[in-house]
Image (cartoon, rainbow, N blue to C red):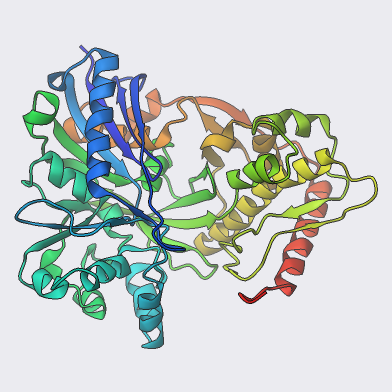
Length: 500
């Protein structure tokens, strides 16, 4: 009999449940889309009860597809959209406000207030993050400020707060387990990244009572069991991990210098820096990757704002392609960009530039420019932006990367992956199982319950699908990178203001 492992992958757009056997083969997948609400411009909210209901539904769907029951599952893991914040009543388990999604900017003024008070360096030093509404602390403060007697109720111990991992664990155990793992806690602006504990000074800056925060636990380890009323039998909850950290583990980026890139709407790049917490001097975030076995592993993180969404722009905005996958054939049939460079800074530039005031641009247009040149230049821009983040990581870590592991929708584009290898001058490795977030969570759960004796055993099971080796002439690479840098410098000159 195989050890069956269940991964709950609770994302922003959908909830998914995937069942793996002990050889990491996918047996079944359940998926349900999740509504998102936009009550005001830049406000992004979800219904916490809908999040939980969708999770119960997709687990039941996956079990039915695999012809298994709850008693057949050795353990489950939860991996989740990070920073999204929920506050609920301890007595009833009912949310007191909508969940504020990581994308939401509705608490931006609260962050600006603390920047003006001089808190910016404190938070950078203690958390590795920047004072931004992206993270959870300002979202907690916003909710407490927008419910009746919120502060008094928090101080009286009537309210619980958590990221999605905490909420799901609390609900699945019928309120018996109130925890968060260290990878999720590191995204709140409330945890000291060196001690991995809630920090009194950070909590005081937001006037958030420390007593209302969940217990911080290891990423890998049994924290409790689901109530048998949900899946017919209790299932051990054996791992909690933020989605990007789960993907890092699922790609087996276990050594210092290992990097993964998830090509989604944007790109999320993480570099394993081992037990060294590195403070970035090049526009990156420092975060906890995972903690178990007495070791805390850190990572550097950088985000590219526009990646897959640039391909959607080619399809929906310009009408140059009918389907996203058409870009691969067009690029392979087009020898080069004919000098065209696209900078898809539609929502500003992310790491390492962090310039929110620039707009997108195209350079190098001639009478001979065709749709194909623009399509290819847009695909190349995704690789250039990822290159910029990786070079920032190498500078911060004072070491080169050990190749690049890739996942996400756009990683299925062979042209893009080959160009990424060419422009980086290093191998790009695509895994056999593309569901690396769920895979990483399942692997962590398997380690917790002894299905796998060590990460060495996981390394023997994990398989790559394809490797892309650099084939570009070094002189051509430098010419292309020089042209990209000139384009980046040019868009930075033409910053726009809100009234424009």
